[in-house]
Amino acid sequence: MRRGTSLALTTVLSVLLVLSVFAEVWLLPTEIGKVVSVFPEVQPLAAPSVLWSVFAIACWQVAAVIGLHLAALARAQKFEAAAKRWILAIIGSLLAFIVLAVSAYIALNMMDYATPGVMLVLMAGGILAVVAITSLVAFLGNRRYQYIGT
Image (tube, rainbow, N blue to C red; front, side, top):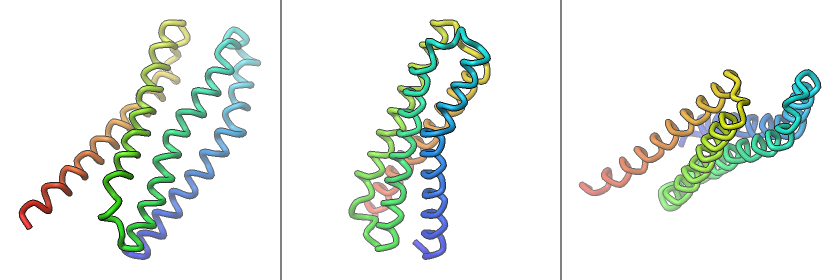
């Protein structure tokens, strides 16, 4: 991997990690508190929504931290030896996110709290995770067949 590409990838992933921690620690509790103050009937969902959001963001944080590790391996030209298990770990964390998104979607629908904004965010996150998983599986499949003929 070129030095500039590696630096850009590391910078973007680091900034996203910092922003996600900021969202978990400050933004989510503050915004959920504001929603509860305006709509007191959603009080029973306040604590579970913070907990769910932290777990969902943590799934993406795991993928970002592994991405930072893979960028470091690529920079050290040791990517080929360890890539498969780390990419499988990213796929696992994204699958965990999909499970969280589907369970939240079902739970919110069953409790009649399925607002369009929340449902769209859940579906968009799930679709993004499916696209990422598909891309990673295609990458692993391409790497496997790439070396068979050589």
